[in-house]
Length: 183
Length: 401
Image (cartoon, rainbow over all chains, first blue to last red; front, side, top):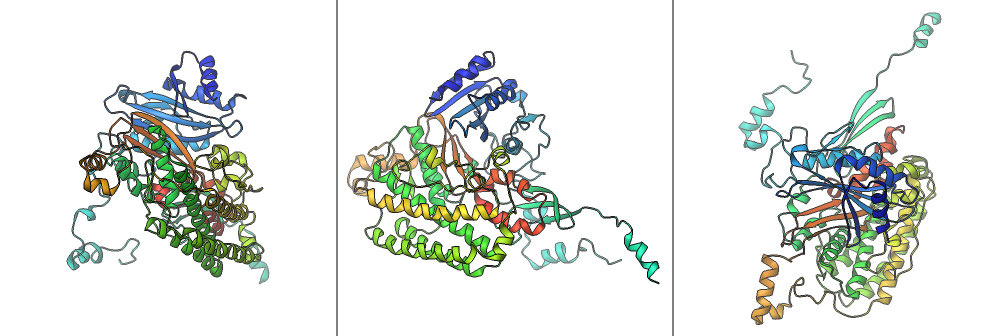
């Protein structure tokens, strides 16, 4: 039923649509990454589509395929009760997609997560910071070339044995507490 | 001398916004989330939410497990309603396999899922009552949760980390005396529901703390991707169980409660009504359920009977292959969604045709709610964070993945 959505996108953005398919209840259009904001703006505003709920922005790392990444936008219309997946292939050497944070306010938050986990940057995003990981973290953990065991301890304490009394005295007792009033 | 004092009081006192850190281990931010608040007196000017303190790498870990080994990890997403996560994930993988499960399995999934929803709503209601000072309402809620967890324990063998779902079915059928035990639990739940309602719904302190605080209008809620009780409290009747029925939700009769103002009190009322609706669904499930198998008849997916494993070579090889190599899920991708207790729970699953998932992406409602929670907090008072955060019911495991 909702395959008609694919036709609407094809009609409107013939050049941008690279591919489309409908399988397992998921209707999907694959579009050129530079056209993502335009296509989603159309899907959001058009009366026949009215995709007002952005369910999820996800990303897949295909590792050995070219282009390596694919960013997946899951759009839903609360009015017409239909769903469409918009996918945008992103090559590794040009890891950048235009942001859609001006269209949905939740998009900014979800794009931050995709950047944190996969390292795909979003051009024009007002505040691209890490969400799950801490600021000092290096790399992007959900990339296939990031090893699962590759931990990054938060402090220098973690690599040392701290549970002895001596260690405790060195690291805790001998050091002035922050904001200490001692001269 | 009085003239000397008054001019200094009339002077404009220079004030600066105060920065306040709330969390990650504040007693009211159960789960670990940190708010960096900019305060003007007691009013919140700006709120910056920081999550990730409970990040365990669910998605990374899943990529290194076989399809069935992911179930224990899904238990630890929303640990107050683990069965809903189990079944949501199982449904997603079954969509990819294009596998249909037997009707009894669907009935049990509907039933046990609603039991999980009950435990979640009781916990959320009880915790919000407790943090507003209503200890007795909390104890009633927890009693309800305990007797429900006793039921869950009978069925699954565990209270919290159940791992009851399987791809293509369930671990086991319901025990024989389940229906009689449910009779008792249902009567007690109605009593508890009545107690909570009389204790809280017309309680002056509770009303003052919850009415008009943390309010959100439907447009903003949709824009921020809110789903579940939060969106319904704002007046949008979106419920995946009703709009896109899965399992046996199209066979049972239930109502979707909808609020008006989207404030904390409405969210509390929506949850309270959903408790009644869940009890109704469970009753209908038990009534309409027919005896039969609970796992699909498909040796590619479902483990063989233990008798066959020990006594036949085919059974043993089948068991060995399924355990060591995992279910061979055909290559493809699917986004599957169910109604979790806090909102829409989606799984974006990618398979490359091997025994391990290539990607298990999760749309966790709590994480998306945390992205927009500042909309509910900004402009309010510091003390309003506590009821708002309680009725949002953020679950750390689900939010931080």
